[in-house]
Image 1 (tube, one colour):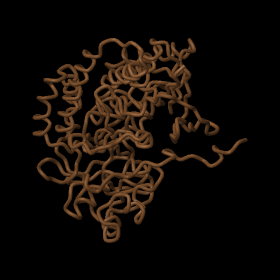
Image 2 (cartoon, helix red, strand yellow):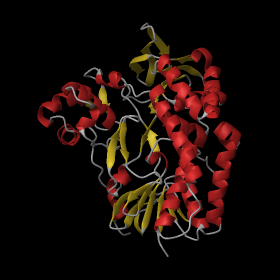
Image 3 (tube, helix red, strand yellow):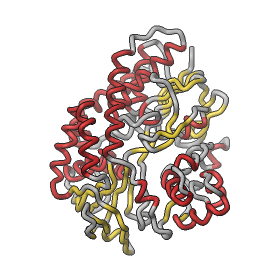
Image 4 (cartoon, helix red, strand yellow):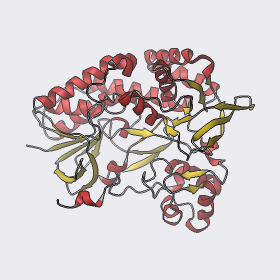
Length: 450
């Protein structure tokens, strides 16, 4: 039987597995979570008492249905599930999988990458200290443990997660001091009209959530610095839309500007990546069904940032493409493709409404830490340009930006902006950091036989 490996058990991975199982295949699913669901539908530990309505809000029904679908397939032994495991390398039809104890190898004939996305973070002076988290990290703590990571919280950035997390924290009883959106209101209005045409229900829910934040929400802000004491943040200094200086006391700061597709495994699998002006990042290239060539298929936010609904559709389509390439019958994909195109229009409009703060990053003071893993400042990167030239990989080699634990996941885009501004070129002209194994830190002992 054909061996199909699915990496990721979020909405895309679960739907892909369901489609393959229905066709009589027995896929292997590797996922970093202890329980399937992905980030958006992340599940708490067994015995956690908060109901799904509290964890997932209006999406509770979808979340529970996905969880039940996957659990049923595992219980019926129709899926081989490897939880708490990460694919750290791909080579010659084998995945190197880091489990709780060691690295094992899983062979495959077809590979479906449903790797999802991570926070896209822009540096702010002072962000390198304790008590500063990504929005996604704050949401993980809330969903998986029911914990707010501060007593007085300030959230800053842009995009739907900013508003969603603020609402979730408030509903859980946390104190949110301010929600600071760098997107100007005029851009939000223009993009919002297109969003409403593509997905009116989703847009209205977002507007209602925003309205409930009231005076906590501020659009078109500038972020100056995070003031910290011995125990972490004490205040966020910012400017309102009129340029007036503001200071909001806090003991925790959450930062995030939309999401960044997780592309390291796609890169190792030989999938070409190209710069996408709409999403302002390097994205894998695949056809409408998710085919990337060479028996590799992509689905979910690791291909395009479309959210949970789009990820489910993309998972079905990637599995259908895999089945079709194997010569197996599949149902017509026309309706799913039309729905996906509508979601793509919505996502593009959202990126326009809530843009990446390129100018803010380009103008970072020299003392701002750019790469938190290696402690590289914006000034140090600018100095490195004299030796490296406008090339991301040479700057990495000579200046260490992107060489740390996260392998550029949090600093690559910001580093490209700083370099591009210094030489007067667009950020994509700097190139992208090449993916290399292992894509996650692995202890040497994990590769040694007991």
